[in-house]
Image 1 (cartoon, rainbow, N blue to C red):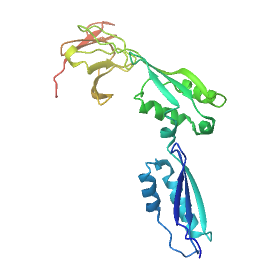
Image 2: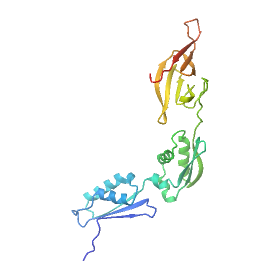
Image 3: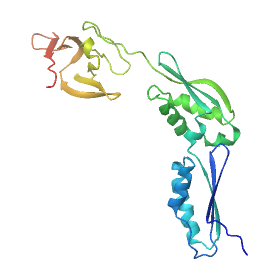
Image 4: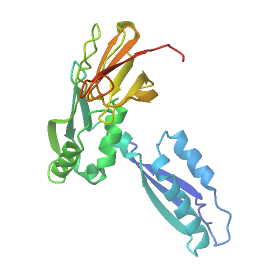
Length: 253
């Protein structure tokens, strides 16, 4: 009497990072389990197969169209899940600097990539000030080294808010001014083309709310909701006299 062989078996590594799917059928036309059955088994084992889902589907249907009676599909967990315990992001107390420490097993070394490093940073809430050159340098070092300590990859500047209409320089906008301490998420700036922009910080990003073209505008000052923009070479009142635009911000308009 022949021993019955299960149509589906899945073996897992001890760390649950690698899974080997074994498919079997008695004849080419035998009924075999579906992809959904494979996915359900992996889910029950809490194996993160999202990155391997297409591979499973492709190799499953290749097996079904072939004359083979057995198939072995090896898959790996999402590299982010696998490597997050070996690639640690450290953030300074003032949240202005971020560094990466790596102590990665040799068997996982080939799984590291530049996009993965960015994903790990994003997963650690580091989304701004990331140096692409530093990330590329770190990746190059990982080709020959498996242990790297506190490699700096991101840095930022403390935000400078305006006070009593004084003009401050910002790393984000040229000549940025906060017009009201209580509304520090609102700002104005004038670019090199004389365009005044009103911007508002919302949902982790600066959004331009209004823009207006002011001829020869070059400087900016704000007091309460009054905006004063200085212009040069205005000839209305005399050659090279200069001028000032005075505007008032009306919230919601």
